[in-house]
Length: 329
Ligand code: ADP
Image 1 (cartoon, rainbow, N blue to C red):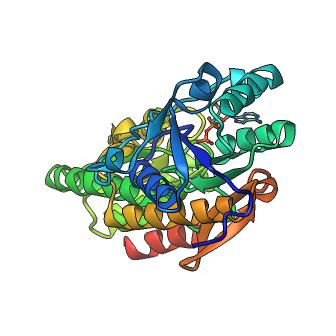
Image 2: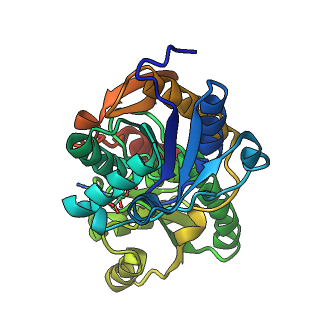
Image 3: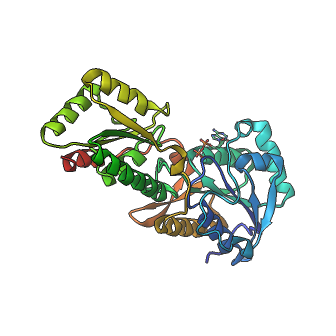
């Protein structure tokens, strides 16, 4: 327990950006940690839209019952173009003041932290962030809430696809989420035994893919799994299947996992991470911190400033991709 340096009496908590399994255990940790220190909590609905539209409700200890296992977010989430404009941020700040909210906990990705940063710079409302996104693409933290559940969901899907790929001697291209980053693809690919993993940082020419497929067939392999991140345009797996067919005559089936990767009950790993981060975020806010994300590095909780987290890009880990290829011979 920390001393409440800013004499914060009431905080707001919100989820923003894409939903991620584990957001509910994070909300639970925030609410119960704050109330146990005598601090009241308001839940802000639909992220920044709710802040602008004054959609807020008090949260009590008992409101957190039975949510630890639920996917999605009980506070709802969303994206708000209005919040990109100073006039709407001023409206949001006015609502927060009217509700007597002295500080905020933001659960979201780096975009949400950018919004929080702007709110602090313009209106001096302290904010501490927790990274909640299935993409794990936030700089400064090894892990984000929802990533573990999402990769397990996708891996289980690949296990099932593998059964049919094997029965029919087929090539399957499985498309996973990840617009700008390949963390889901690399982790799912390695854990699902994929032969090739394509990510925004690891683009493999079709000629090379065909050459590798032919060589694995020559070695007696009858089925293959290729994992690709969706990239800028979901559905790229179809383009890849077409290109492989045109170059080689090999028929590749496509499976796009899509939004099923976002849903489901959070894994034990994500519940533990969310509980630790939620609690530490409250401690940090009450301890006078702002514009700071609580993250995890080498299993230790750390603080990283929004200024750094929102500017730097988290580097991908190509070693997993190389290992997947080595082990899928
Ligand atoms: P994520 O938090 O998952 O990265 P987004 O990038 O969609 O998701 O950001 C969530 C929301 O944060 C946006 O819809 C917008 O309301 C707000 N936001 C993002 N960037 C900024 C910014 N530069 N200034 C103000 N608000 C922002």
